[in-house]
Image 1 (cartoon, rainbow, N blue to C red):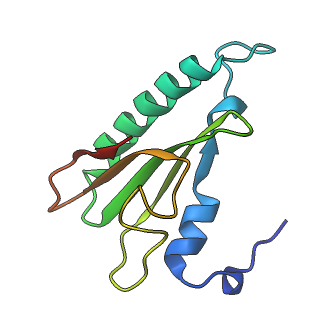
Image 2 (cartoon, rainbow, N blue to C red):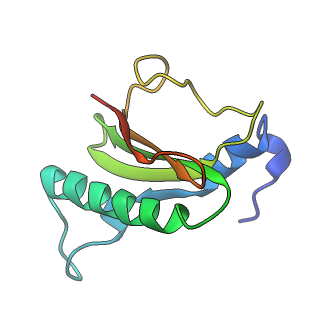
Image 3 (spheres, helix red, strand yellow):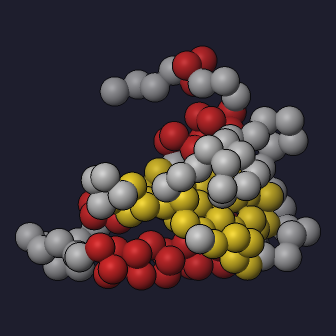
Length: 117
């Protein structure tokens, strides 16, 4: 399936959509699945490793670890922080009900867990 970037309001929206990892797609062992707590731990570990790699790049990035409470699905999204092209709200309390961890990283940013809930 080819995705038309024109379907999105900006490049950040396109990146956030295409750079979404479903933790359940990567079971610990073939044929097995993780419980929700294990998936959250795996998502945080993945986000921390991704942050380490993205901190080596000159661009600025945002990583979001999310939990869909209805599907019990844990996701990790990442996208470039592009001035004037936001994706969602800067606050986890507005609009992003499912996000549980937000990390900003990349050259020139002090990385770490910025907000949690």
